Length: 201
Image (cartoon, rainbow, N blue to C red):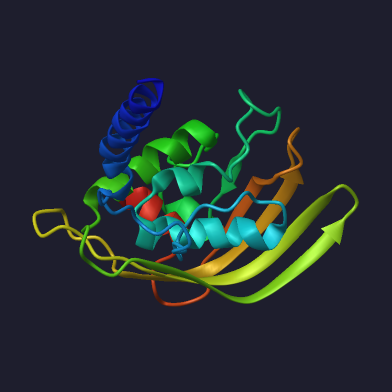
């Protein structure tokens, strides 16, 4: 009797375990692979080169925060961003660039991204770049070529821009590099960053 009872108990327990274990073999919903790299992903700017990379990636990725997050913001880090325009553009547009800081840059880049086409070609390329360590900061002198595509209903804006940027980079409290000064210089017959800022209002 005891043997039969034990046999019944083992059989019942085995059956329950088998039924419960069936869930182990049920196919799960597929998950996206975790090793696929986004070519335009944000990278913490631990070097001056990465600052340029994030600025460039902002356009094809359609992420305006990539642009803003490498600018000094006095409210967060103690370093404030200042933009100095091409002098020729500034003299033709008096008052536009008075005290152009982080807030003005945020307003500009937000409006610019609102005009961009989600499907068009957006590209910022850096050319002939020099990295100059100076005391406690870096200075980057680089030519740029900006290609933009806009939505069909938007006011016409230049699709090709060229110029030279001189960027002063400092490290914030997290030891990440950010731009404290951006100086613009027109170097071609094409519009430059300064021209674009006067047109995006």
